[in-house]
Length: 454
Ligand code: HAM
Image: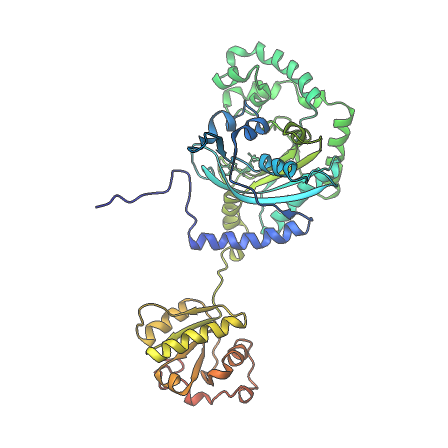
């Protein structure tokens, strides 16, 4: 027997029940983004490898060990499956001149790829919704990005998502802090773990972010970047906080929040929850004022964030307005039929009803009895069934059977099909005559479908 193939570890199929939750999420996301003036941008999944090395930083987990990089077999070009969206978005903005002409708010979504150890909430292919605000220097956009997040959690009905905030200052300020930090960490070098020793001189800031319980005390007592901020960075950070206070958004300044990508400066933030176990960061971002220039554009301030869709949806289903999350789109009408002529009329009927904007599920495949077809109609969640048997087909008529909330079965000429179905759907009871509806007693008899008989 041929061996069945499975998806790559850490890369998930999203099956219809779940994919519908994603679609419900998409509807909310699009409205929410419009509310803040964000415009969509669609970006390639594969980018030149040097883009990520330059943007994210050589000494980061992502670039050192998590990228899916490969050589194009045809021309040897070094390519990488995008591990995040900011680098590609900035690359596209520079390439297409979106960096000129004032501030721009852009958003994207799609799969990202990181070769991490898969566990609950951490995947090798995962999805982000990301926003990037290009060309805004002030603290107002930082605060707006954060307020946006808070609004979305409210709209999704998510509780227990808290905000952690920090400022990484400027490159010079980080250099000054870095010197103090290295001097401090060198004194504790013997106590550092392998990662820590490796990063001591390359990326000491990341040591503050360590999850190693043995290093918590050392990290906690380390020199704080906040103490090395100059006046401008300090004022920027204070205004962000004041705006969040005005908006009534609670936060914790976490001086050890450093982020795993190197492009950040000044404001950085993460939205975290305790409800998802170890992978509790649902959304993260910050300011990256030097990235555009680093990638070859003219200097341009920028800030943004990305959220992990899988994590947010897990939270939504668990604690949010799950009812809305799992709301399933049902067809308006399920079309059942029996016999060859009836099948052809049913096929036409379905298209006629789609012409007026209705969602139609036409019974296809094995014909089965009317009874089994009606069971399927009911299970589909459709509002009504259109029933076409030999007799209806011969008379060029259809039977309309409401499936929810009672209502009598009616028969109508095919010529007024759409009007009759729309009337029934909208609960119109007074104009059977106007659309040539035939009295309930006559309906569906020949098709063997009587009210309540299925
Ligand atoms: P990030 O913190 O690397 O930032 O990722 C953002 C979010 O993506 C995380 O908070 C998490 O929810 C989700 N995420 C990351 N890795 C995984 C994974 N392996 N499995 C599931 N979810 C994951 C960025 O990517 C930046 N580009 C964000 C940004 C945009 N900064 C400025 N603009």
